[in-house]
Image (cartoon, rainbow, N blue to C red; front, side, top):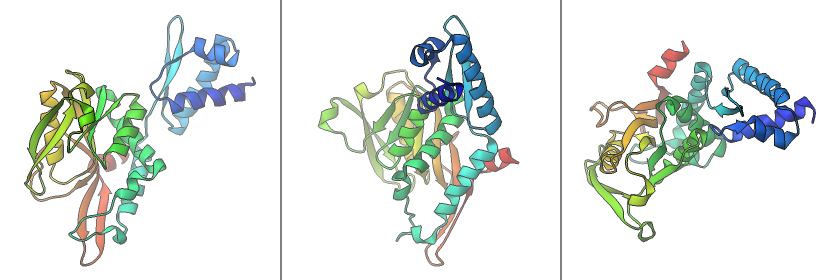
Length: 273
């Protein structure tokens, strides 16, 4: 193969399998090239990714050697992505009866969900979660793509337990918005005791769901190393959880005047300045 062909193959494998380590031996067998030549190819890819802000190619030293792709976004790239989502959110046709906002199309857009998952993964990679945990159903696509970019499993907590899941552990929690008692369940075999978990959700009003997830994780003796939500509804009352990260603040939904106001979270705007 010519160098351009090898670089194309290596780049595709690394980007499509984040955090997976490919040894130089793997590449040598696949591409029929010497390890010294492949090291030069990886150097070209690494430098190009760094210059273009496309993520990080991490090289592994040692007898075998190798590389892996780490999702990483520049502050400017993150701000641009979030501003694009805010623009979609501010479409007045999204306003539903009762002051709710339509978000189902977000979950059905593969490209958008992939970009959001990469945002979550890049932000929370440093805390080294072992599982991504979410509650059915709207948070599943984002959680799945986050898990993909972190190369770890996703665990889905159910609102109603299913017979096919076997023994489950159930907790009651108070919804932060409706103040009603609700339940969530997780199969005991779905999450090993003592796991490091990242909680992910698409939308948060008062934080009741995240609070319930935290209580459920306590029952599994698991450590919550991070909590992330895509959209946070701005409320006058305090949230039921702390130490979470949101990417978008939804400031206003005005059904009368058909106005929706959303903005990137302040930490994103500050980091991009």
